[in-house]
Image (cartoon, rainbow, N blue to C red; front, side, top):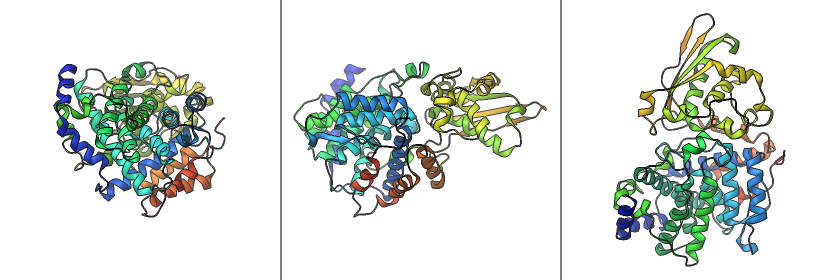
Length: 463
């Protein structure tokens, strides 16, 4: 299959021409609704970056970028978001994307089985530092292009390979497209950039990480690093083979609606800093708790019916943040005990909770053929809670909140933003950043106004 795709890509330039026109056109027309949602996704991801600033994974990644991925000249440096120090453009994008990926509260797109914004947003901030006159709308346009390219690269990849690769394998192409547009590259340089990004994108196995949760998460740190590097290398004349996930005739259907269907509007926003696969079950117990009167001590058992991938999540009591984020059983227990899930529940003392640990034995996770058949288009679960008095509470089939199937209100997204940033940002700074969600759409607003709020270190970032 790979050889066939490689041969097809070589002679399929017309398909790339349409991609290049979309990515590089100075007069690209994007629906206002898409730009508005791009602004929401951007600020939501900024909130995740702020919330992640104090996590160990983020600290390690930022220190690594400063120590080993520095810029040889000041003009090639970018400020690490919520840190204040500088690294090279690829280094800054890598560090922040790794940090965001490890809090695991970032947006995603169901058909991609992964995430775009966690790589694209840090790359946008890195490149934007080279363009002080960049407007908010111009930045949102570039970000939207990255989402559209990455989404199609993802579905193309999943349709043509046997393994399930992490987001870094394909969101690198979206980052490369963003970088080429912001650097003013021509179609030839874009073609090489996409080829470089695809060739070097991390073809890491997602289910291996699910089975052994670590700081590697979804590979988006490397996706950001590769995507930014690809755009810069191509702009300097470095050549890359054609990207088969963009140019092969085998994937033409995935690109045919580019510029007509705006997938960015179909991205979900996570209510919780937990793997998306667990969200439907979390929302199911949340619904039952809101609709019925009972306490945790009243519960005899909890039965979760879910799709296969969610059933494979980490089964035991987590000892690390990564294990906690990839644990369906633990996250369901958190929701039942606290009525919410915040960063404090999946890190530090939140991982040392004997009450939660004992409660895990009451939760049974089962693979449902019905729910599995609907994945990845749907992330659905249903939950039955049996109480000590004999009552059985049934949730019905629940879609994970935050996507087009069950959207969150703007007030809920704002509440999430303020919750995630509460431990790292002063309230006035957090609200100023949230206020940029609307201001970015103004024609005369400079993106540097947002960057100025994001550049200084987060409060207690080293805690």
